[in-house]
Image (cartoon, rainbow over all chains, first blue to last red; front, side, top):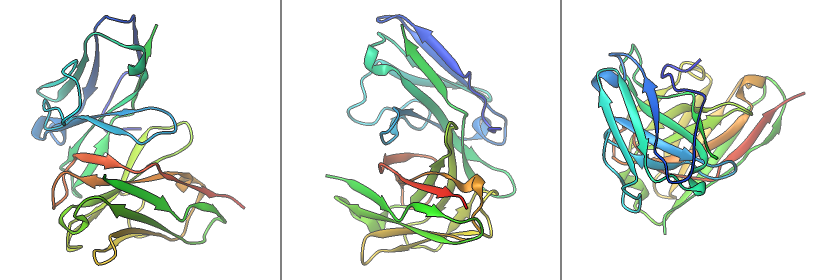
Length: 111
Length: 121
């Protein structure tokens, strides 16, 4: 069971907008930046968002991130069929032993 | 071009050991922290461990603490994961990933393709 909670799946039509939530606590999201990763089966995961709302070079501005309190959100606009993947949030967990934690992943289906 | 290539995976019996390697190229390996992340069959990503750029700091997930050891050879641009006392719960694809910074953060900028470890008798 993941420390960060994500919905198992979301779906939307091409061209539409979808949001993926990531819920945590003050031990993780509430006091740390959040990253988001895109993972297609059989490939290397890709960094989409870091420091909660920054995009690495090459990531289109259709992808955006935000945070409020102990929850973070990935927003994808203008959905494309190529966006179909599993999306993970990640952050630090400031517990007894500092660690990186990921959400359980959200499968995005573009229908 | 940045490349991370994992190797060393395979089938291993419960209780035995295995060492994974990750060969890095295309960037100055010695200036970045490095991670291992795994994905069990049908499951999500699970962070395993991180090592700072100079090897002075290492952090582990509770699930592997005391059994796994991360290390690096900056002269050969290689990251390692020594895995001991393996069990079926350790069956997964293991990815190495580069951190954005020299000390550990939660920003994994580049990932390898992964190597499969299967623990089975």
